[in-house]
Image 1 (tube, rainbow, N blue to C red):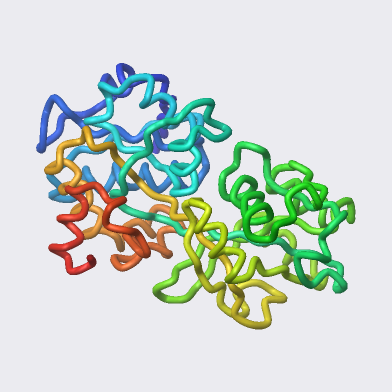
Image 2 (cartoon, rainbow, N blue to C red):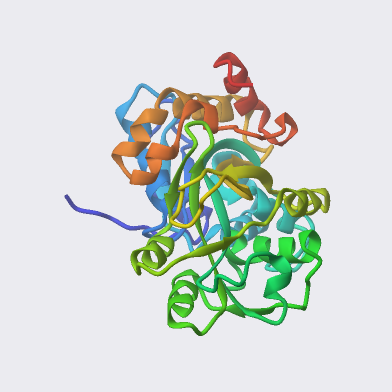
Length: 330
């Protein structure tokens, strides 16, 4: 099979890549899907295939893009493309965009939810059995992802600041997710960010690749829960995360249910997208949610009930909300 990769560099290019649509021949729906090899890229590509292989009334065209932050900045720069574009985003990213916080230099509009496809959840782990709670990390080295990463860096920092009240008291090192895991194993940091993707409906958890690397080392792993109070304080500060319980045995060393947070990783669209278009896209996803696992293992974490799990209806695109109400999901 020949695989063709396209880079999202603007709406004009995407429109030239689009195939005819039974829903609207002149207005295919484009997805700047994120970097090649990521779950967002693969699952968005799966949506394109599903739109072609079913009786869906929309035609979706997915194209590689540099990332989710880039997508929101590009859509702000080209507002005329919003009606025909849906984009992967996270609720944490929406919080940063709307408030003009780094990596955004000014307030940037955020999309409304069409459907959540992953619930990302991370926390800190250590090989030092004496590090058991937040205060034990004061003055210690903690490896996070790279600065622009929402789930693996920015949101953990916001919990450390708003939830733990330890801003500036922990030596944060921005290493990257894979590098942070390796640094933990090498002993060059005292704790590192690990995690993966949760299915709150079936109470299952899929560790990320770097988390599997740490687990596979055979070393005893100890976990530092964020704590219910810390997560609640961070949510109260306006950060777009939600509470979740990481189930016992989700990862080696998690010996009891652990209070944590999740950030919905989702497809969203702006109000400029017509309600009928958003409705048809969302209905297609609801009706075919079981097919996503055929394209990527992470699709196994998707279910009808998880597509709008924990989301305030005010944050859902009106057309999508209609689809959820019809399906009895809201």
